[in-house]
Image (cartoon, one colour):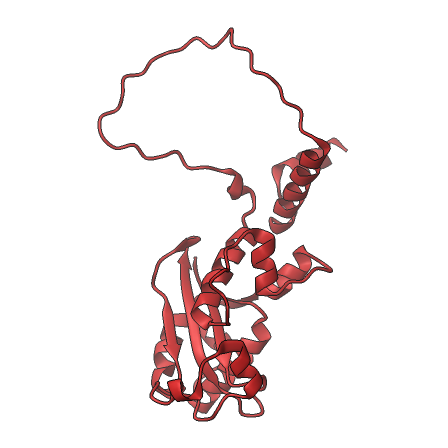
Length: 237
């Protein structure tokens, strides 16, 4: 499955009021592996950014003057996104801006180009109800290093979102580890009798039990209650 993690920076908050995209960043995953085939543009929005927006992304109007306009790269963006599952944090915001930019170019909306759009903000609200679910909050909660994020940037935020999404959707396959691939001559097999070996049994503390149950609950929820242990428990009830 081809997945694209997408983020934009804009001149302001309202595409309908004429605000424009100034940066777009996309990160590609195939079969949950980063491919390195990313897409990134700074764009000349043909207008200045609002003061509040400048405080968020720090991209000056002067820096954008010689950058391509959206219409000049619209076909390249559309070709890159076509047929993919596009994953966005607070998708309604970015989709609204992209649709407006495509409309100006007399091109179809994003929904006509891609397989589907997934909103990680909606996912996070379901997984962590009542908690802060901004990208920074999710990075902190899931152990994703966001120390380089002093200001918003579309490509960096798309990269962080990909890492966050993998953590949020790890499911049962997170419990599987691949055996290392050995190179060179294979060592001769040595059989060891372990029948008399007695291993100590260490009992977990209450805090460890609680943390373990919380991890299991998150995995179960992300796999839509299809984990083997929940199904086995239900069969015994």
